[in-house]
Length: 435
Ligand code: 5AD
Ligand code: SF4
Image 1 (cartoon, protein in one colour):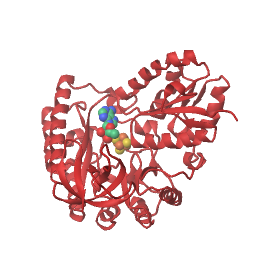
Image 2: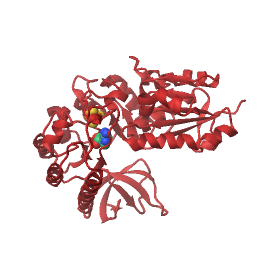
Image 3: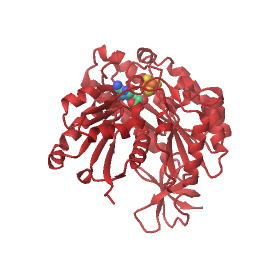
């Protein structure tokens, strides 16, 4: 019997890339590959890249540089670049880094086995098309192996919103939804394999239209699956938060009380220039409606500071919006110009000022995150245990609100949900005891 070939995948960026990497590893399993965590023993290295911010792409080039010695030692080693940098700069990558044998864009993963064969034959292989077929239907089905209690499931890809700063509409293409029956089949399969919590993924997941009832309709059908205990979804645009989805937050017990709803800025002037198509007030009203049906909802969001033309006043209004919302967690970034996007043509604001704004915003968001976490002390919450902790008998899991929770003498097993009373709040996690 021949030794299986070894595949090392390094994943950058968002949860969708994590999901895609899993599916690619499974597809390559059909080609006789097994996964390895060590690039030095790999026969193929695949970087699943992210193009959302400048640094992400630069990291890919420096990582590729590091494989030069490996390839010199092992000329049969094939190196591939997948993901959004591959989509945006495929040909340039091949020119700039001759080590690369294969480039595959996010919509062509089902063609990976063919591309691998082409690369093995010594040719360069590149595919950055946007084919019409559903890549997930063409990727080999997931094997029936047991797996951990949480999983991502991509239901929607691409985006038609064209925010002025964002590369997603160019790298992932137009909005496409997977039909609900396919999603439900995949979800049932995951549950049979031990999954208790599914996070539905999409670049603009609440625009999902693979079900007549939209994302809310899909969530209600998923909630009827026995054994599936928790449903989450990410990430959403405020304008696609329809009445049905708001109502679901109050009515579907399995839908967890945590919502990632990026706003990017609190200034209407900047929101307009970002082409967000909504105002700060509309966003706040939306959160009010969500909290009226689910008062304990923890909000999460994304912010960009230093967008072209952002003044200190604009930034102050962003801080005001953050104060009004009280986020349970949030991500903030300094604006970086992405080639090909409308905002890339506009002059940057003073970068020292942008750095300083980012620090102030992050300090405020960290304070809020900590305050909401501290407020959990004394409360009872559901915890889904995911793995063993460092201490014997200790388990670590996620609360309904997505906090990491450590429980000593947990008694329950990995994959089970228990009621836990929170007794302590640390910098990044909570400690609790079984009730
Ligand atoms: N510069 C900085 N941050 C960006 N994001 C998207 N594009 C850019 C950019 N050009 C952030 C947004 C988005 C998150 C995924 O990344 O906040 O919601
Ligand atoms: Fe990018 Fe999100 Fe805007 Fe779509 S809605 S363009 S993915 S920031």
